Length: 327
Ligand code: UDP
Image 1 (cartoon, protein in one colour):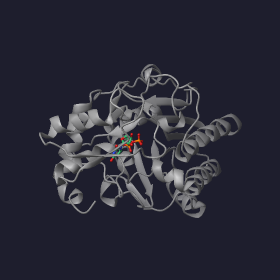
Image 2 (cartoon, protein in one colour):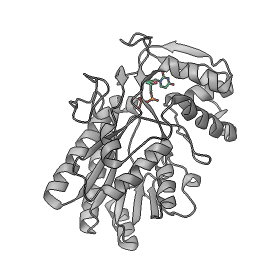
Image 3 (tube, protein in one colour):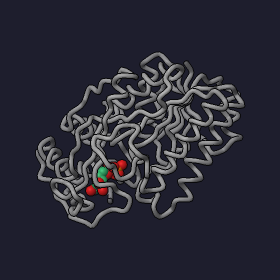
Image 4 (cartoon, helix red, strand yellow):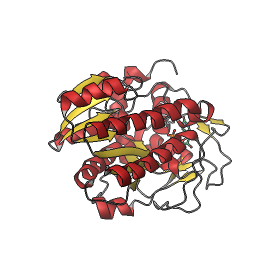
């Protein structure tokens, strides 16, 4: 298939584009390079520097290329800012997303795999979280992901759009050539490893959560495993009915445990600074991914935290000049 990957110059998007190419698909990446990096787009992919919120640009991309499917990964993603500047999230993630769907319909492209998030669940009532767990997002980022999933359901019902939403838990790790590089970086593992490289303490946001050590618990999943789930979802999007699939390893690690694991991997006594809670963070997010396993045939190759951190560390060390600048 010829797949349009929106956000394919970003962290997860570039690894997905690479996996699609390796699986024999043709790939066009569309990215405005706001967070993405031109050099992260695989050489075999076509690249369009553009914003998916522009119908004019989208129309011309769809006219020229004849896509069979879309992987929609572009979005505003920083949870914390979504609590202080929600309109950006509604405009980009919801209004822009509808614009993308309408362009797809105009050009008779009827398959989409959507990058959704564990943030759709909000503060969980049970752990691990199953897909039919109540969805009460506590930040506008999670709400925009939930709204778009629901819009997909309606477009499926009314216009025959085939869709799968993949609810990522915490994407982490790197391939040999592609890794995480956001500006600003808000994610835990790259920040912990940058502290290892620079000696500047990493912030621990909140030590008074109702968890075993007071810090937040998350389910870290290797970006390579996330990318493999996308390839599987594309194979099955025509016949699966469920809509949403969790992608996680079913094992939660606290912020302090992640820091300790990173100390073990790097051999460096990473300094920390204890800080107040960050707005919008649920205490615990751990996935049950049994639906993805049974229906998509997804079987994570990197279920343990240390190899995930190890891969991120390898990548970061080979790109160390990018990470040793001012924080
Ligand atoms: N976190 C932290 N220090 C950092 C970055 C993140 O303590 O420099 C915490 C954050 O508050 C959350 C967890 O680590 O509890 C995971 O955050 P991240 O931004 O990596 O992913 P999220 O779960 O928000 O998508």
